[in-house]
Image (cartoon, rainbow, N blue to C red; front, top):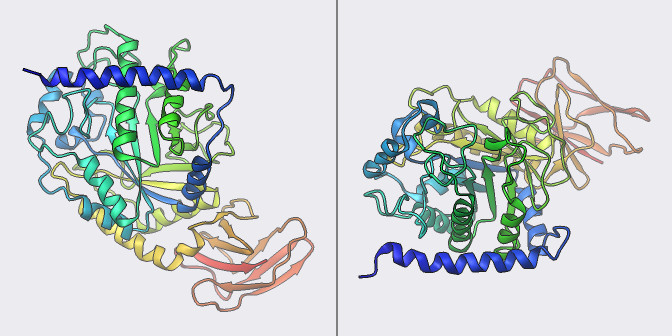
Length: 440
């Protein structure tokens, strides 16, 4: 009888040989040169401006966030028993994607494997996945991929570089209380990761891969993740696929976009984002409430105003916003998250033109707000102004042809000189975001 393990061993050998071949070819190039498809995806990614992050896995069953295995020092053998009871009967990919599209988001990034090591897709290289280990027996990644294609939403896939369950993963600074013996085998673990990544690329064809966990070995300066080899593998399989890594460092060679965790590119309130800002496309990720994974008691969701301000400030800093939701264990998106998404969608229906396809404007972000720009149109987003006058120090001799309120096109008085332009508003702004459209 051919066992499942025997069936898995054949593609493992094939993919390992393929990996050796493509990385050998790649190393003949001293510098990563993105493909035309990759550059096109970067441009499209920057135009999208807004995506929804989805943290979902076995941890949702314990309703206390995605780090519960680490926070409570749960033995990985005990934790893995959750899989036998994981049955998200209310999961509906079409409902998820339509709700996300109605929020104004242009792409989705979902966790395919988080730090707990459980794979939320059908993998040939482990039985510890949603199809083999749970009674659900459905590949939610395939269903989401199909729904994204159906509704015109781009798919990004999150993948954890670290693993609190596998014995072959070298112990880092987290997951030390999960009962592993520390018998590391890097070659085995690296092969496992690359085989799974190859699966994700070939089965679901994501526009981007979103890596996390590099920081688990930042206490080991000599530790080599061999990212150059892994990135070469990815770009050889899917040259257009964008690579980002949440390592909180200046981007490494082979990466296609730079991310900031809970921070705008110019800030470091979280303590994760003091790194140099690159010329790559930028993205900031933030939670809708306080945690990434589902937490039953965390019902303090950000207000519409807070979310809009974060989205607008991200755009004004030339970055995308990746806003997180944590689905419930039954497969439903929490109602509070759905409510906020609907509110945001209505706002984007009105103001989306000032966000989508824009780049940061001529005026640097200020306490009062930010500017975005598209062609000869500059949108002044006034978020916090205590007066009815606003001075804009325009540069390079640029002059204003006209100024109107974006929504109703009412002319705005302005005085212009060589120093800049003074906008004279009728009232002190009270809107969530008063947008003034300037024609340059």
